[in-house]
Structure formats: C-alpha cells, structure tokens
Length: 282
Image 1 (spheres, rainbow, N blue to C red):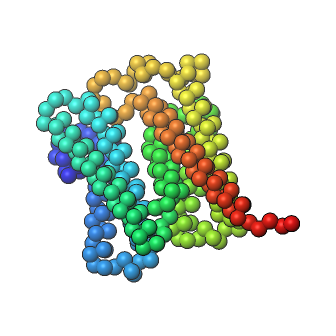
Image 2 (cartoon, one colour):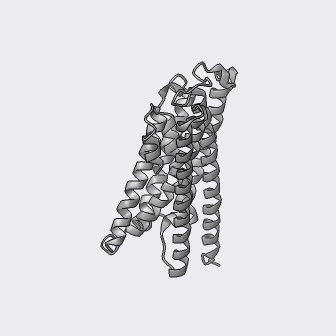
Image 3 (cartoon, rainbow, N blue to C red):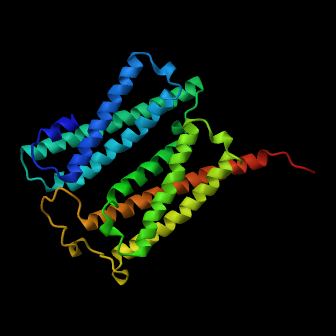
C-alpha cells in the first residue's frame, strides 16, 4: 500500500522518495517469497530458513519504521496541502502499520523459542543489539554517501572509517552465529565479543565527539545553526539539505553508541558469570 500510494502520486520524488519506495517494494517482495516458501512447506529443506526469516523480520521492522519517520520529516513536511499530501500521509501510516506487524512477528517468534526451547541468534539480546547496530550503521552509510560532509576534514574522515570498522565485526558476528560457526573461534566467544564491543564503544565515542565538534562548532569550521546552510530552505527540495544530514548522522551515531554500551554491559556480565563458574585451583 505504501509503495502504491507513493507511486500513484505522479510527481517528482527525489532520491528520498525513490529510496523509500525501494524499501517498501523490497519488504513486500521478500515477505511474499517467504510466505510462498512456508505455504509450500519447504523450510525443512533449508536448514537456516527459520533464522533467516526472523532476521529479515527484524530488519524489515526497522526499515519500515525508519522510512515512516524520515519520509514524514523530509518530504511530507514540505508538501502543500492537497491530495498529494494526503496520499503521502496515508503511505506513511501504512508503513508504520507494517513496522508494527513485523515487530509483532519478532515477538511471536521470541515466544515460540521459549516454548519449544529452540535457539536463533537474532532472537537473543545480543542478536537484537547486533541487528540494531548494523542497521544504524547502514542508515549512516546512506547519509555519508554525500562526500562533501567529510572529505574536507581528516577528523571527519576518521569518523567515516570508524563506522566502517565497527560495522564489519558486527555483521560477521551475525553471520557466524546464524551459521553456528562461533564455536570454531580460537578463544571463548563471549570474551571475543567483549573485546570487540569495548573497542567499538571507544571508537564510537571518538567519532561522536569529533563529528559534533567539526560539524557544529564554529571554532572548528562547523555550522551550529541550520540557517547557515544556504540549501536548507522551507521549500520542497525532495531531499535533505547538508545540515540536516549532519544532524542525522550525529543522532544515529549517538543511538548506535548506546546500543554498543548496552551490548558491552551484557558481555561483561556473561564473561563475569563464566569466570565465577570456573573451578578454583587451591
């Protein structure tokens, strides 16, 4: 419904509108494929199908939610009152409903894991945090495609490097656990995750501080006010101006930092419990 409503508007959408149309189309197509596989009772032939479908549901919930929020802020706000604005609002509402349904599916699968005592990494606390971390990093990447945000300053280039460095281990952790390969690592997996998460927390702290200083502090060449950006005007531009992109990256960096801190606390507790459980040598 979201895809159909926006496609039927028949006006120039800009890259923001086209990007979210791709998201809605992708979610619809993948859900249809998963539904077809389940109706044909094919999951037993695909050993990782159940975990993959749960992983997809987690990401789709976040995708539809982000589409609803960003689309309404960057697009609907500038549309004049009329049928086009009504259609855009309706598309956003359907996107919100879709995100709720995907979240309900994740919750139901979580309850199913407890009842049948089955395991799936993305339905655990560290798994959900990894999904959130990789998703936030992906949204950040979509904003920093605009290289004018950071190429003029080495400190900002370091921030971009941090996003990439932290994304790779998080994505690998999801793949290792989905394939049940985490036990092939040379050391204990919780300790391995604790070290990587601690490193990610430190890197994200540096990225957040540098990004705020060099993007919003005049002493470091930043722009503290939106009005200082000549591209940010109260008119329909079909995309986000540079200052809005800077702010979005800063907010997403802060959210991802909180996610990494929460994961650090989790793995610290896990390592502590395992350490206490080890037999003491007298």
